Length: 123
Image (cartoon, rainbow, N blue to C red; front, side, top):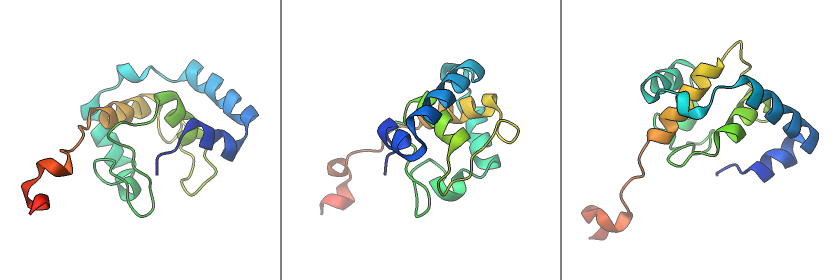
């Protein structure tokens, strides 16, 4: 399940989203500054893979994050302020640089081939 900004707002409330977005934009580095290589290591080191899979494909306990991740600001807000099944990862636990690197990693994951292009699936 892909989380949309509307879902985040419904979960944590409009005022909390506005405050979190302002704080995130002021404190977080731009996603373009992240390193996909460092992000892959941070994704594993911080345990993201345990729920979201090694390539962000999602699993039983965590939604799909890649390919085509949600916008960086939305992801950063959710990661920092979530009150759902995933615990919030404050900056003391997951630095802004690591978060930007993780986003760069998720953004670097290519889409898989379409099912029609996989011979074994078309037999």
